[in-house]
Image 1 (cartoon, rainbow, N blue to C red):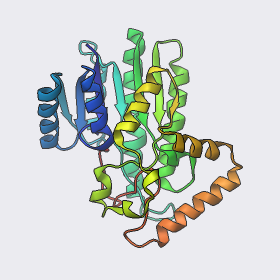
Image 2: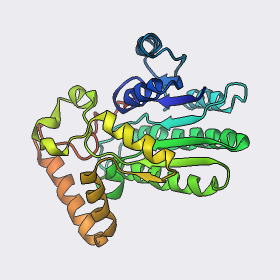
Image 3: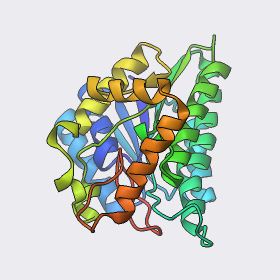
Image 4: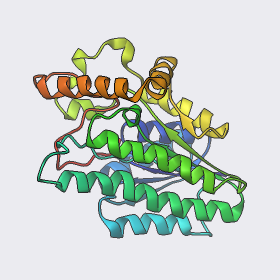
Length: 278
């Protein structure tokens, strides 16, 4: 039976991955910071889906915790067939800010942890000749809307670079670029979604279905839904000056909007010092 390790596996997109994979009979290793929530998620999935669920409490901004998760991926006696790098950190701090603490936190969670865990999974899977890695990025990675977009652009680029290095090993790597997704992140951040048109919203289950389908097809980049694939096509093919202009308009609207204003695509950044599993 296959086993999947999911970071940020107790809420939002991560929880949707756990549910979809458990429904397929895949055993799970859930990684998140909240031990109580991990235990509740494990109990529910075991009871409803009949799969084995292992839990690892880890804060991916802490290097020792990342190494513990990497060691689990390296464990040849308990192989992981699918890694979902999903945990994230919202960053709304200006790139001009003297305080770089939130940038450091975001890079630790969304760049360094993805690098370390992706490398550990890639080595183990390549040695066995099979496996898959899914890295949750963002449609923002195709724009230039600040620190979060910059970090997600790294995730998108890294995923494709890792895919190249793993060619011929039987291991695939897919970067998933969602747009606006309905998750509890919005509720915790004051529920900013009221001003976003309904047609722009995507359910976590739709993101996961597209991600798993594209991973199985060996695609390096997955953009869920036709509307976001169209937006992604424009972002990749318009002149970069036009993309920067659109990005500036998005960034300006975020700075000028009242607290109930719209978030930037994919998820609005929470307060600078907070990390989230989504």
